[in-house]
Image (cartoon, rainbow, N blue to C red):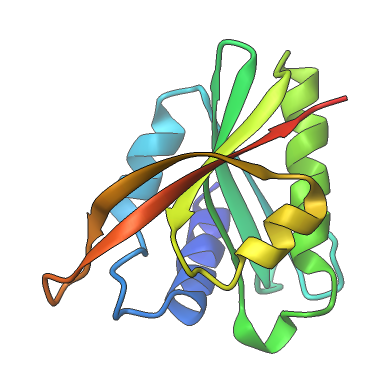
Length: 152
């Protein structure tokens, strides 16, 4: 699992713009995975689970709740965006969540996040808003939008 956490951290560093302060640190990832109700998937640039020495190109981290699974983080390295990896990760999330009894997926993101197109094309729809929920490292406040996606 340490190799996968290294891969997750490398992808997160490459994918998240530090201006928004959205990336988690290693301790946060390790702690989340230690709870037992958190799950992850790392994919290589070919959309497969990475071989021993292969780097990750994208990942997700999710948390299971009663009949719901919350997508906590999803990231794809910039050089691999637009190649279907985000969709592959969401497909794996849906399949895993369904096998754990989830009936819907949830996620929350800052308003204006370019990943919104990926999520809405996958079937996510807005269900709520939190005004000025996020605070950037510079102190700027940003709205959050909550989305849901029903699992058939």
